[in-house]
Image 1 (spheres, rainbow, N blue to C red):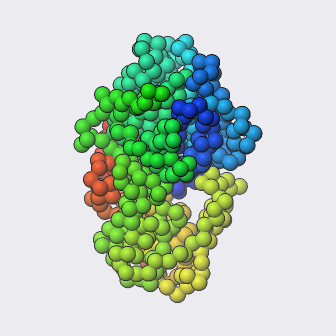
Image 2: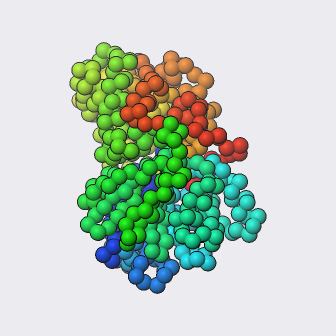
Image 3: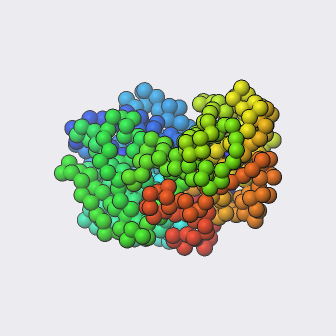
Length: 479
């Protein structure tokens, strides 16, 4: 059942989590570096966060962990970080699409088992989590959370009992789990990263002095002055030890079967990140250029809905020659988990997040670029805000195609009956949101955003790279 925060943000698209791991071969504590890395990934999850560390030279299996509800700077104090001693560690920021938003479901998960300890951080969703969970329950497993990350951790632990190494256990577990996952796993002497064979979620390798890093987005490497080494390939398992990095590509698929989440380029990732060699900022600029080419309109000003609409708006301006401007002032102190007293307060909530610069739009024909329209309620309110500020015309351009199908891989795009584009024409949607015109990005343009890399377009096309689940995984058992 969705919690109050999720219901109150039902017209926004959310990602599910960011992961960060670090192993310092010189023995230095890594908790503070992980903290700043998570800070850079805060846009990927704002409900909870956690860090687990261990000392590779200390008692084998001793893990020091701390996690809690809220933003990184709310959960971690100077005193907490000072108490997290260890030269190897993993961190996590979480946004839940379903399942309880509770401290128990916060990550990293720490498992104590017969072979020692594992700490795991996971970004993504499995499509076969309910079946795997039931199989484990019928063999005596007792679950402490309602997240599919625990299903992954259990399978790795069970395989580890039968295999010579933890990385071999990860490989065996990957043969059973199906769906989207980027994993960072800490064992007593190793840091392991794994990416699902389709490459839905990003994961890359960084280096800082004599330390290696695994992280969801490259922007976090810049934050801690680390250098980007390379992306973890879809299906690849990388094992980092004092002897260096070992790669296992036995789970990799042919390139044409890969299916990166295109929404990383459109919305999820920070614009200063690079995802599998493709600049996120460049992709958004290009999306705006495509909108200007495919759906031109006469206007006086192009503006973006912050933050991910801004780069696309700049691209539209560059292509069309229409001046780019700022129409919205965003309250930087309101996160995606802002809680309103009740549903009827939605208008005030939007205005708490965004204000319109009247001087910028009054008397002008405005092109407003947004990254997506889900239910349409927020778009309607923002269009109204522009009109109330004196805009003569408001033309809405969306830097993604219409959402028509739910996502099962870690994006909380709801069922089709809750999507404004499902069963409606673009003209009908235009009337609902109150715009003078409305245009979406052509679905054929998506492969150009990723510069030809294979992508998942299921939420737009209904063509899923793996079979959708036969039961509802968007309920209790999702992350």
